[in-house]
Structure formats: structure tokens, C-alpha cells
Amino acid sequence: MTYKKIVLITLICVVTSTKIQNNQGVMDQYVNPGVQQQIDELTQSKIGHLVIDLAEVTMRVTGAVDSLTEGVKAFGRQIEERLNLENTQWEVIEGEHNAKVISLSSQANQAEFDINREKKVLNSELIPRIQELDDILLGLKAKQTDNNQSFKEAEAIRNIQHDSFVQTTTEFTDALRNIDEALDLLTDLFKSGDIRAAFIEISDEQKHKVNKALKQVKSNTEKFGHQYSSFIQALTNLTEGFNFKDRQVLKEMCDFLNSLRLNIFDALTKAYKDEDSQKQQNQLRIQQLTSEKIVFDQQYADFYQEREDKTVRISDVQTMISTRQADLKAYQDRLRTENNNYSANLKIHDDILSSVQQELAILAKALQVVQTPPFLDFLNARISKA
Image (cartoon, rainbow, N blue to C red):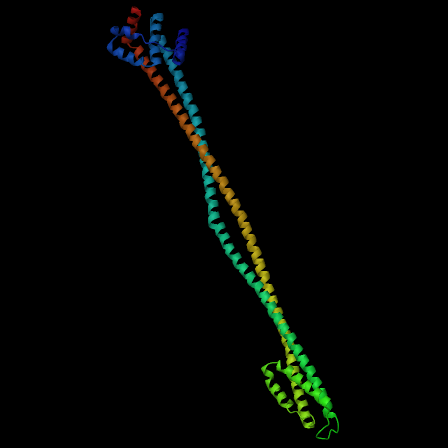
């Protein structure tokens, strides 16, 4: 048993560190050609060469190779255990690798899914909505501009109407005052003297005042436009060659002036009514424009706020896309590194398996050779010639 241990330890040490010199060539002429071929094949490897040398040592010490056979078998079992351990460790490594690949692939797929989802939201929803909101805001801005212009136009029209009202009422009031003055003068003339007389006495001063008053009335009336053309013509006819002494003519002049006064008073009343109506219409127009302005301003504020929110959302989405793109690259880099490491480890594992399997094959072949009579003859011949 002690010798078997010595043989086993010797095999292990030599396999891992010892360099054996091949000196069997001197014995070639004593070896069976078939055995020689097998020996040559064994000596191509370090472990095969060692088995042959140990077989010679064992034969020298014990006179047989049985103990060597047991040692070689034990060594083979250790190699098999090393092979099993390697396979077990590799299963762990491979399992960890597969788990990492699955995890990294899942994370990469999720990152890619997130990127595509956010890009779809960005390109299909947010950007088109921003463009739509820009068009809406542009339209509302145009409406606000039109509304503001309408305010100015309504104010301008109202100012024109009011200025016209002030001018018209001033002219009408002046005309009424002048007519009243003329009527007062004519009435005084008409009532002077004997009212039963057909003619009256009139001084040059009175005549001058009456003419002046009538000319002023005519001047006022001419400002009122074509609708007073008949009054103007009648006034002209009456004043031309006016006979102030004829009481009947004075009466006709008074009647005419009263008629003119009534007409102008009606026009003045209508002017006030028109002013009230135009003022009311302007107020209604202002109320309408104010209501429109409130709607336009609120709509603009709402859509503008939505655009601001969408702009912030776009920034957030772009940040999300950039972040997930960086995540995706990191996952892909880690996956690439993991696969590269796995490939390198797989090569090491395959090399170990190949080496161990070769060692086992050599040991199996050595066990077959060392137990054959021709090999024993080879050893005896080698020992006897040493």
C-alpha cells in the first residue's frame, strides 16, 4: 500500500512539474515491433513516458507491475474527479452566464422598448400637438388683433357720431335761437301800432335788426343740407323785397319761421334720439367685443399653457430617451463583455477537458500496454541491459 502511494505521488508530481528524457532508443533492437509502436505512442506524452519509466522502476523493485497498475488506476480516478469538478464548476459558471445574459438581454429589450415607446409618444403625439397648438395660437392671436382693431373702430365711430351730434345740436340750437330772435322782432312789429291797420310804421333801425336776424336764420338753415332747400328758397323769396310795413307779410313771415322752428326742433329731438340709439348700439357692440375678448384671451391662455406643458413633456421625454439610450448601450456593452468572457472561459474549459480526456486516454492505453506479456518482456530486456 505504501508503495502504491509512492507511485501515485510520483505520477502526480511528474505530470505537473517533471521533464522526462526519452532514452529508450538504445533498446529498440530488443523490443517486439508491435510493442515498440505502442511504446512510441505512449512516449509522445509526458504522462505516458512516465508510466513506462515507473513500470521499469516497479519491475526492478518488486519484480512485477501489479502495484503500478493500481497506482495508475488511482491516478486515473483522481483525474476523473478533477474532470467532474471542472464540469461541475463549469455548470455553475455557465448557469451564472446564462442568468446574466437573460437579465442583461431583458434589461436591454426593456430599454429598447422604452425608447421606441417614448419616441412614438414624441413623434406621434407631442410634436404634432405642438404644431397644432402653434396654429391655434396663431389663429387666436389674429382674432385678438381683429378684436382690438374692432374696439378701436367702434370707439372711432362713436367719437365721430358724438362729434357730429354735438355739431348738429349746436347748429340746431343756434338756429332756434336766431329764429326766436327773428320771431321776437317780427312779433313786436306785428303788434305795434293799430293791429287793425294793414300797414305799420317801422324805423330804419328796426328794419336793420329784422334783416340781420333773417339773414342769420338763412345762414343757419343753409348748413342743414338739401332737406332744408325748400325752406331756404322760401326764406329767400320772403326776404327779397320784403315789405316790413305790410302786416299780412309780417304774419306770413312769422308763420313761416314758426314752421321752420318746429321742423328744426323736431330735427333736434331726432338728433338726441339718434345719439341715444347710437350710444346704446355702441355699448352693445362694446359688450359683444368685450365678451369675445374674454373668450379669446381665455382660449389663448389655455392653449398657451397646454403648449408650455407639452414643451416640458417633450423635454422630459427627450431626457428619458437619452437616459434609456445610455442604459441600452451600457447593457449591450456589459452583454458583449459577458459573452466575450464566456467565450474565453469556454475555451479554457474546453482546453482543460481536452487535456484531461487525453490524459485519461493515455492512462487507459498505458494500462492495456503494461499488462501485456510483450511489454513485460520489453521491461525485462531493458532491465537486464541497464
